[in-house]
Amino acid sequence: EAQVTQNPRYLITVTGKKLTVTCSQNMNHEYMSWYRQDPGLGLRQIYYSMNVEVTDKGDVPEGYKVSRKEKRNFPLILESPSPNQTSLYFCASSLSAGSRSGYTFGSGTRLTVV
Amino acid sequence: QQQVKQSPQSLIVQKGGISIINCAYENTAFDYFPWYQQFPGKGPALLIAIRPDVSEKKEGRFTISFNKSAKQFSLHIMDSQPGDSATYFCAASSYKAAGNKLTFGGGTRVLVKP
Image (cartoon, rainbow over all chains, first blue to last red; front, side):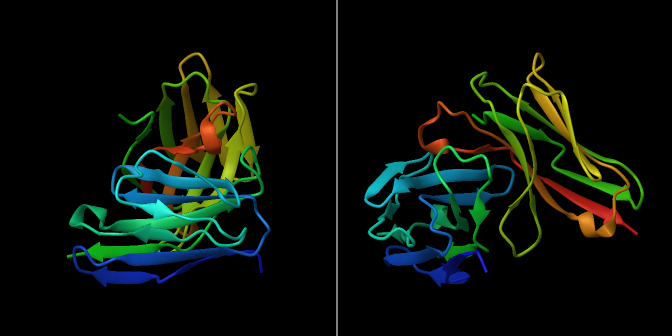
């Protein structure tokens, strides 16, 4: 089944404790992206990757890091999480950067930073 | 500043009624306008999309109306069903935008009452 898999689904952590949210896709998609979803604000892009070793900032990159060492994986790293990073996070992929076939989203990771 | 403004934030409609969600955008470079549907606990999924060279696109009970001069587009759900209860996001993107970024509206939570 074609899918984007995120882990964990739920995470509660304390301020300053480094964490990684993993994302993997099995569709051989070139393009991957991370979004955060907050009430009333919709989904905002954090980082994106056009291909292996090619990443760039989205609209809200502060406090986040990413890497793209393999085509299928695109982990999101929070080096020192803060309470304002409490949110619902989604990883998405698409065939290419200009694809109009739509994004495939993962099921989300709900992160709470206390 | 949200580049895509979506309204209403929520709406309740009776089974068989019409749900209407409106979006307005500012960036005239946008050339692709998809709608995503999100069920609780799931990631958004592409529902229907339109390009600015057409004024209307229909897929089953879902119709997008597009008004280029007003920079507005809307989603109509005809004969709404309880299974349509979900959060709907409008979005926009441009081939000129770095990283194929989808800019999302704030979302509309739709509840269809039986």
